[in-house]
Length: 145
Image (cartoon, helix red, strand yellow):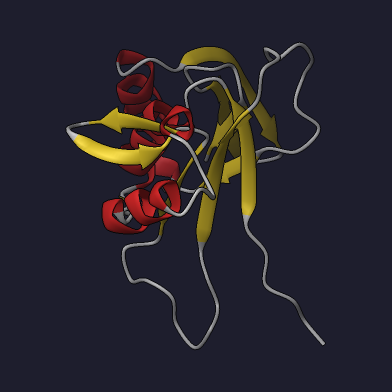
Protein backbone atom coordinates (compact mmCIF):
# COMPACT_ATOMS: atom_id res chain seq x y z
CA UNK A 1 0.00 0.00 0.00
CA UNK A 2 1.32 3.44 -0.92
CA UNK A 3 0.93 6.32 1.56
CA UNK A 4 0.41 10.04 1.11
CA UNK A 5 2.59 12.45 3.05
CA UNK A 6 3.21 16.13 3.57
CA UNK A 7 6.49 17.95 4.04
CA UNK A 8 6.91 20.01 7.23
CA UNK A 9 9.30 22.92 7.71
CA UNK A 10 10.35 23.89 11.23
CA UNK A 11 10.64 27.67 11.27
CA UNK A 12 10.54 30.90 13.26
CA UNK A 13 7.83 32.62 11.17
CA UNK A 14 5.35 30.04 9.86
CA UNK A 15 2.99 32.53 8.24
CA UNK A 16 5.71 34.60 6.57
CA UNK A 17 7.48 31.50 5.26
CA UNK A 18 4.19 30.00 4.04
CA UNK A 19 3.51 33.23 2.11
CA UNK A 20 7.03 33.13 0.60
CA UNK A 21 6.77 29.48 -0.48
CA UNK A 22 3.22 29.87 -1.79
CA UNK A 23 4.40 32.65 -4.08
CA UNK A 24 7.54 30.69 -5.00
CA UNK A 25 5.63 27.56 -6.03
CA UNK A 26 2.48 29.22 -7.35
CA UNK A 27 0.53 27.47 -4.58
CA UNK A 28 -2.04 28.91 -2.17
CA UNK A 29 -1.93 29.46 1.58
CA UNK A 30 -4.62 27.43 3.30
CA UNK A 31 -7.14 29.65 5.05
CA UNK A 32 -7.62 29.17 8.76
CA UNK A 33 -11.13 29.25 10.21
CA UNK A 34 -11.32 32.24 12.57
CA UNK A 35 -14.72 31.13 13.90
CA UNK A 36 -13.29 27.72 14.81
CA UNK A 37 -10.30 29.37 16.51
CA UNK A 38 -12.60 31.64 18.54
CA UNK A 39 -14.76 28.64 19.51
CA UNK A 40 -11.68 26.70 20.70
CA UNK A 41 -10.73 29.69 22.87
CA UNK A 42 -14.28 30.07 24.23
CA UNK A 43 -14.42 26.35 25.10
CA UNK A 44 -11.06 26.52 26.89
CA UNK A 45 -9.17 24.33 24.40
CA UNK A 46 -6.87 27.20 23.42
CA UNK A 47 -6.00 30.70 24.58
CA UNK A 48 -5.48 34.06 22.93
CA UNK A 49 -1.73 33.39 23.32
CA UNK A 50 -2.12 30.56 20.78
CA UNK A 51 -3.26 32.99 18.11
CA UNK A 52 -1.89 35.83 16.03
CA UNK A 53 -3.14 38.27 13.42
CA UNK A 54 -1.66 37.77 9.95
CA UNK A 55 -2.71 40.02 7.09
CA UNK A 56 -5.72 41.11 9.12
CA UNK A 57 -6.93 37.57 9.83
CA UNK A 58 -7.00 35.56 13.07
CA UNK A 59 -4.71 32.52 12.75
CA UNK A 60 -3.08 29.90 14.94
CA UNK A 61 0.33 31.35 15.78
CA UNK A 62 2.23 28.09 15.56
CA UNK A 63 1.50 26.96 12.03
CA UNK A 64 0.49 27.66 8.46
CA UNK A 65 0.15 25.46 5.42
CA UNK A 66 0.21 25.81 1.66
CA UNK A 67 -1.36 23.52 -0.90
CA UNK A 68 -1.31 22.92 -4.61
CA UNK A 69 -3.87 25.21 -6.27
CA UNK A 70 -5.75 22.21 -7.69
CA UNK A 71 -6.58 21.20 -4.11
CA UNK A 72 -6.92 17.67 -2.80
CA UNK A 73 -7.69 15.08 -5.46
CA UNK A 74 -9.02 11.62 -4.65
CA UNK A 75 -7.80 11.92 -1.06
CA UNK A 76 -4.22 12.71 -2.07
CA UNK A 77 -2.89 16.00 -0.72
CA UNK A 78 -0.05 18.07 -2.09
CA UNK A 79 0.66 20.14 1.01
CA UNK A 80 3.51 21.77 2.89
CA UNK A 81 3.18 22.67 6.58
CA UNK A 82 5.23 25.37 8.33
CA UNK A 83 5.41 24.92 12.09
CA UNK A 84 6.83 27.21 14.75
CA UNK A 85 9.85 25.93 16.68
CA UNK A 86 11.79 27.85 19.35
CA UNK A 87 15.31 27.06 18.16
CA UNK A 88 16.98 28.58 15.07
CA UNK A 89 18.21 26.45 12.18
CA UNK A 90 21.75 25.37 13.01
CA UNK A 91 22.86 22.72 10.48
CA UNK A 92 22.52 21.87 6.81
CA UNK A 93 19.22 20.29 5.75
CA UNK A 94 19.29 16.52 5.33
CA UNK A 95 16.19 16.70 3.11
CA UNK A 96 15.36 19.44 0.63
CA UNK A 97 12.90 20.32 -2.12
CA UNK A 98 13.77 20.32 -5.81
CA UNK A 99 11.69 22.93 -7.62
CA UNK A 100 11.42 21.99 -11.29
CA UNK A 101 11.10 25.04 -13.51
CA UNK A 102 12.61 23.73 -16.77
CA UNK A 103 16.23 24.00 -17.88
CA UNK A 104 15.64 27.21 -19.83
CA UNK A 105 14.15 28.97 -16.79
CA UNK A 106 16.60 28.07 -14.00
CA UNK A 107 18.70 31.26 -14.05
CA UNK A 108 15.73 33.64 -14.33
CA UNK A 109 13.78 31.89 -11.57
CA UNK A 110 16.83 31.71 -9.29
CA UNK A 111 17.49 35.43 -9.84
CA UNK A 112 13.83 36.26 -9.08
CA UNK A 113 13.92 34.19 -5.87
CA UNK A 114 17.14 35.86 -4.72
CA UNK A 115 15.49 39.24 -5.31
CA UNK A 116 12.60 38.03 -3.08
CA UNK A 117 14.86 36.98 -0.19
CA UNK A 118 16.46 33.64 -1.10
CA UNK A 119 20.22 33.24 -0.75
CA UNK A 120 22.33 31.85 -3.60
CA UNK A 121 24.46 28.94 -2.36
CA UNK A 122 25.98 27.28 -5.43
CA UNK A 123 25.47 25.84 -8.90
CA UNK A 124 25.67 22.12 -9.51
CA UNK A 125 25.54 19.69 -12.36
CA UNK A 126 25.51 16.00 -13.10
CA UNK A 127 26.29 15.40 -16.75
CA UNK A 128 24.06 17.70 -18.78
CA UNK A 129 21.64 18.29 -15.88
CA UNK A 130 22.27 21.59 -14.06
CA UNK A 131 20.67 23.19 -11.02
CA UNK A 132 21.06 26.11 -8.63
CA UNK A 133 20.99 25.58 -4.87
CA UNK A 134 19.41 28.38 -2.85
CA UNK A 135 18.24 28.89 0.72
CA UNK A 136 14.83 30.34 1.60
CA UNK A 137 14.57 33.38 3.92
CA UNK A 138 15.02 31.12 6.99
CA UNK A 139 18.00 29.20 5.55
CA UNK A 140 16.26 26.05 4.31
CA UNK A 141 18.14 24.76 1.26
CA UNK A 142 16.35 23.90 -1.98
CA UNK A 143 17.32 23.37 -5.60
CA UNK A 144 15.93 24.98 -8.74
CA UNK A 145 16.26 22.86 -11.87
